[in-house]
Length: 286
Image (cartoon, rainbow, N blue to C red; front, top):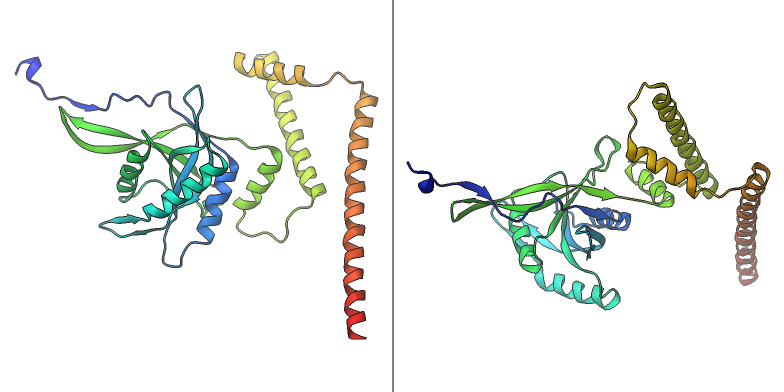
């Protein structure tokens, strides 16, 4: 057979090598909340992802909303009118947020995911499919992102394959504390501000110890130096304010005293409100 007569199995020319996504913690919290409030007969929750495309091509996922649906082994039905109404409502508040994909709860993709992805492909080019493990198996919340890649035989399109792309889940420390609590299946109580600060300081000390150990290993020749890590450490050290130890201790102590004062004032306010409520109840009885 001549080389020109061969039928070639190929993927779509749209490259996903440089495609990545970034999701904000609010989206994960919102998805978990929708999963808790789902109808009793629903096995999973699906919804729309909102955000924007950054200049470097990264998909920035900043918001989401659930879309009612019914699903069986043969078909999937979405409430398209509800989806469009919610989109219009969201864009009245945040007109810069557009559809960037859709999400579903559970691990990985299922048979019905291809049908739902086909619908969102008509809403936006190359949508991102986000999966969230709301069961938090082994104390970890698995969050993954996929895009669809067309598989063709010659000029004939055979199927679509879901390909995983890099996903960045970045949080500030306050969001990190909340996410750690969310991953725990049961908690006795929510941490106070001081307990959250204590956990944060313990994590910070552990990270500093890891950096010290890495630098010592590089100096002693036990570990090969990594230029990117070195630049990151250098930038971090350069960002620290140049304060003497006494001035730094005074700054930390003043900040801590301010927070303790706020806690004290809030405690007094709660006590005063509780006392006023009891006096009001007693006056009504008398």
